[in-house]
Length: 213
Image (cartoon, rainbow, N blue to C red; front, side, top):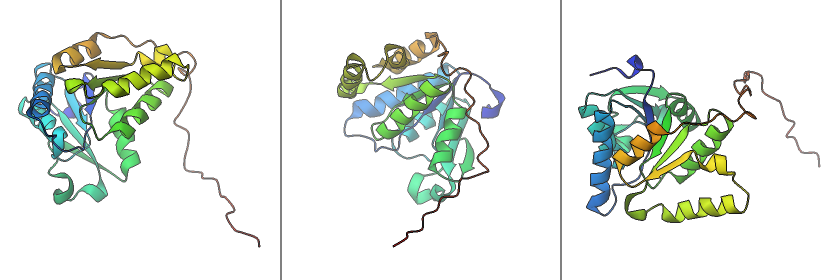
């Protein structure tokens, strides 16, 4: 089994805490996603545990002898909640640290599930302001058609720029999605390329929250 830390490229973040869905096509598609990642020797970063659709992806990747890193908050390290983490496990303090660590350790991001819309847009927002990494959407049976139409509408109305929308890669099969992610070149945004985000957070502002009646 190849250790996750031994590779410095080809790292993909997949995240989904949703249930397994009601149709077999979703289960098969996510199984295929894991197998295809393994065939391409792409390491996997995910949110720890082994339940839901994510568990199926991780299982297939791990069986393919590819590095797997599960990032999980310490309060969730209860087997009845998330299941046993597959591969290497990194325990963090909270959900915010979990997201930061997953984003730091991944080169691109895939949303295979349907219960992670908040995290999807969080990743999109952060990548446009930081490193402009790619976002992959596995659109099984047109599930994300409505969301993609809404994104197109926001571009049309000028709320999202066309270059920003280009970092979102959508495909209906795992092989097509991975191939597009690997072939796409992300042009850095000159407006944020030199911005330093890692400021010292040790000094916190003290706010006077007392009320004077």
